[in-house]
Length: 397
Image 1 (tube, rainbow, N blue to C red):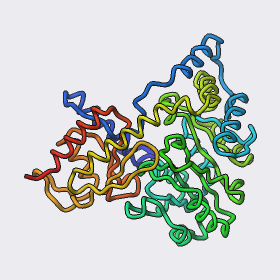
Image 2 (tube, rainbow, N blue to C red; image 1 turned 60 degrees about the vertical axis):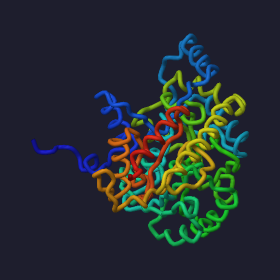
Image 3 (cartoon, rainbow, N blue to C red; image 1 turned 30 degrees about the horizontal axis):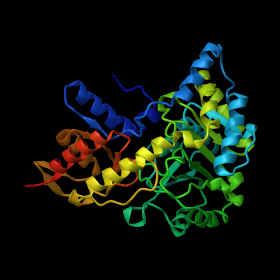
Image 4 (cartoon, rainbow, N blue to C red; image 1 turned 30 degrees about the vertical axis):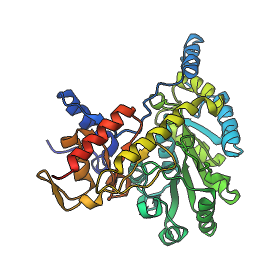
């Protein structure tokens, strides 16, 4: 039968992280022992105090449609969180609660980007940014960095990437996939460039803000000249181990928030009522209540870096946030390992899955073709076993 699907969906790539997870699941179902280090998902349970708030919401009969942009008391809690953690002054009418930070990002791009607009993606970037821009008929433009500069772009790179068609810049710190964290000074240097282009907006994805190992988190909207041009995206998935609860939110200029509410009203309407009630408890709790998870991630970071350093051909830096390492493995390109020709990072990731039975993600999907992403949101045992398998798979002789 002739393909009747739209060009839009036919041209849309499959999420690389979800595709790798699906391949890993398929192999597992066939009896192969796969260690999954591909998904960005904490392996902790949601804290009990949040689960208790959800149970209470059920008992209190929260079961009706919610306001499209979120419960007012949740939006007030988000405003308090922004002030407490980021020193940002948002009002409830500037907040939109969505079904995950991914929808928050998609809403923002849809309401700002016109066909033909350029959207600058500070690479490496999360895999879905490019596809979301493409769905809005914008042009995703990469500004690349690499391990030699800690996966951070310079003000000159930003300046050189801006054209008359540039509408939006998407930034992400702590960064997925590299774990790099932009300092206040580094963000202010980028803002000096953007000060010259007042028609350009900034989407700042801060979903990993609390998973931070020493470099203080700094919100881009904290820069006075950037506040009214920045859409701050955050959510509960990563720091609170609530990936499946699907709660994200934005703080933005009122007119952008209203537009995102309008967009969301025609797509999903309001976010899950029980999850929203639980999120009030999560956001109003002291950040110290989730510190045990961050402390554990920090230990795992040290473990995996020390183990990977022993593998010849892996080039590493030390990530300052999130829960990923992003080694440069380009030394393997053009080589043949145990009969498998490695031409690029995708070949390498597939080789590790098939030969070492370890699921990672190719850096191509993140705008960094020399790298692979390895998540250490896994048990110490799995980390040790996975790296041992990788070492064995890539060691010749």
